[in-house]
Image 1 (cartoon, protein in one colour):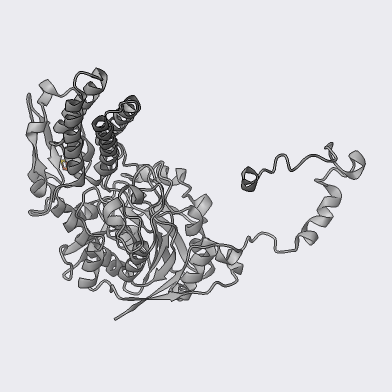
Image 2 (cartoon, protein in one colour):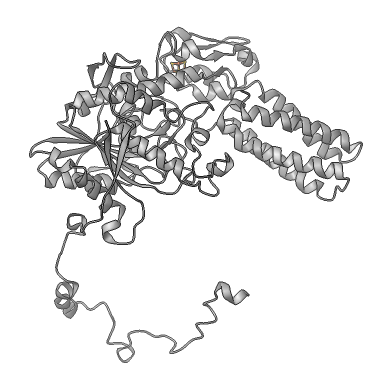
Length: 453
Length: 107
Ligand code: SF4
């Protein structure tokens, strides 16, 4: 079976080829407008960006989809969920934090024309349990309640890299982003007997000199919200069997060499992302979930970090379809095909050539992770297929995304008004309006490259 | 497979040792910088940071510096030594900053 992926490239040179217009053009080409019936509650799921991240999708994309949904009679809301860790760099870990961050990043009802909500409640505990017998590793998942309650979902994804997932596409937008807090612990393998951090991380208590030897030992105890880390007089103890994998202690522990993350934990989580994505589709309803990938500002890191580096490849375009595996695979193939951007991590990691995998070198925290793990798992469990047909979509006149307030020609709009309120000062300097030099040497300031020859 | 960050660090340590040996009694201050780089990297080899991809760009930069330093010391013309050792010191400082892993988060 082959899935259709509707696609437009990233070039823009007219109103019809603005990325906003292209997004709606592929939305229609993929038939998403037929998905929404009058009265449908439509969740638009996206990543609203961490505090000070600048790579996340501009709110105008979600606004445009919300307007489109409204024009079809649907009731849209835009949403994200609370994140797993509680460390100082996690600025969306409660609904309060999430809403403050989202608003600072431009996501509010004022900009979206519909509510922005935290889909899994104040502490991330509002969810809906889904049985998943077909899961590769997860046999159940916990989906953010507002998402599970929606009639239809539009998954609007910024396609980029990720420190754990290697890629952050549609699968990750749902496989992590649509899970409640306990859903995220599940995907991250919290307390898992083989792949959990507690079971698989390598613990080096000998790298901690304890209360006597570590100046700032207190942070090692205080970084765990579950109280599982105890600094003794000359070393450290960790109740690893109770570790939920929240990763709040990540930086203090790994930067001191007290524990080493395990590849198994990351690999298992990547497989579980596909499982949890499938669970989300099941929760909303098969055929009720539409996916759009914006492959632009393709940073090596996810929007969940508090900065965004130079993109590793140029903007690639806009992709839409019903199969998230095919969609992510199409984007991934385009990244491999592209040349790297000078001055980016792609150059530092020596993966600039077309045909070379970029994300595997640039994005993951650890070497050795596969950029295809989520996708392969997705195909195995029947979420989608790696085999896709890229359907190029032609640009079209986009009247519904044109500036709407006054459709009259400007002459008609302003002639009467200018009779009353004239912005140009015709009454000054004999109709010329301003005090200016009649003639100057323009060649003197307009220097060109050729002049230097 | 040895992580690239560790591989780079081993090259840096070896080069630093050869440069120190090649300098005899000259450039005492430079020798101090090189010796302290050896000590820092020996200590870091025990830490997880060098196994991460984050360690590759900053160790690459330091490796480039010591290879250049080694070449000029072997060539016997030390006129660029102060400039290069300064650059190496700067890149080692950047490496140490990266090793604190500020802002590293997985959600
Ligand atoms: S020890 Fe486990 S539960 Fe505690 S902060 Fe670290 S990852 Fe979270």
